[in-house]
Image (cartoon, rainbow, N blue to C red; front, side, top):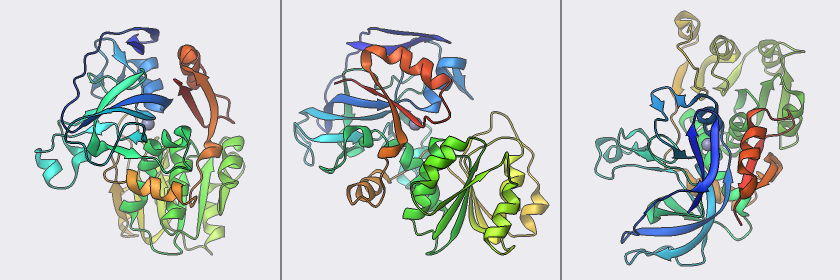
Length: 344
Ligand SMILES: [Zn+2]
């Protein structure tokens, strides 16, 4: 079938790619409609590796997908042909120890789309387990369905933060994950969110989506803005969606005594961490890796229009223009948030 293949670093091709997938008893075959381009896809395209994951053979990219069920295995009970769905891209070993402990996202044997050596979903169809395939509410488009995957990251972060009603949150970074985390924090009960970045157009989009106060760190100090907004007390929850040297210190400085700090962004190398600064506030520090069990929550919020992700889908490309989509995503205008590729 025709697929978007990363041949090697900086070389993409849209070509026929032999891929044989047999439909198991508890699998569905999904015709892919829309796939979002993620920062990790772009990173593999540009650098050929993320941490220990190195692209050694041609690999199909893409892991944020929605589509239509085309075929179901004999044991499938919850889905039928024609259902509009989105898919959770990581499939763990059901008998793995992490899975049995309820942390299937941490299963060392998890097979995650477009993480070498596992192929992604930028192709006409995939076979996927029913258990990781979710029906879209009628009012949720395929484009929104393909946004569930990155939104799940924010929802997982909000869940681990254990937000209480009316909490004030700070999100460092207004990239797609930062903005989606701000929306997840509001959905989780935060009264308001401050979000910081250096890109004014992204901050403007974030500010239009709810009680979200933009802080442009080219103009204002992040710590001072948080201090002003909280009478010098600090934020109840701080999400670091930047993950750069320095963002960690800023995150700690934005936190109130007893706050929770959630580390979302992944620094490319070890970064300094001021233990004492965190100790004197007795911060609770949480880390996240992808997500677990939040796709149904995302769809519940989106179907009820408690959360509207449509304004974040800023750029659409046809499948035949996939390479152009990736080249654009490599150097996006600051007003772009999410690039999607449509196969139908
Ligand atoms: Zn993604």
